[in-house]
Amino acid sequence: QVQLQESGGGLVRSGGSLRLSCLASGGLFSISDMAWYRRAPGKQRELVARITNGGTIEYADSVKGRFTISRDNTKKTVYLQMNSLRPDDTAVYYCFGHIPLQPLRRGDNYWGQGTQVTVSS
Image (cartoon, rainbow, N blue to C red; front, side, top):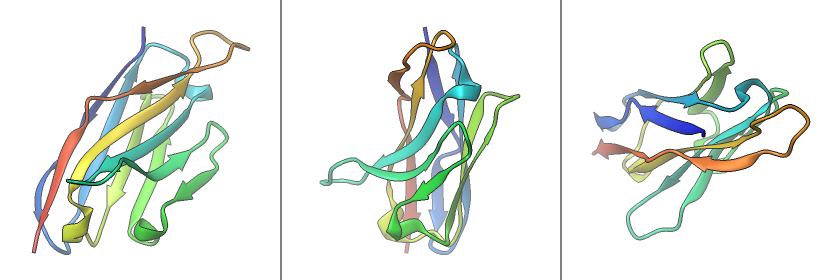
């Protein structure tokens, strides 16, 4: 069984920074593709950033140059460093993982419970 646990959300002023962490328990983290999504009030969930097991990274246009995704396979953790935060970054941020349970097997999709990020103007 795989569980993803986010931490690091909170309230910050516009221009501030936060770092989100997502700890994975279970599964083969080092060969997993991981991502951060967010859902703002009244909007659909959207991809923020993705990092593959090979280290390929992708960002949403709205966060390029401000957010950085990274991973530490030894700690089974993926991070999202968020700088120059804006009020429109306010959302619930979700950790996502496409995580295999065994080598050479297809992975399954897993979601964390979400962490609230609120940016005040």
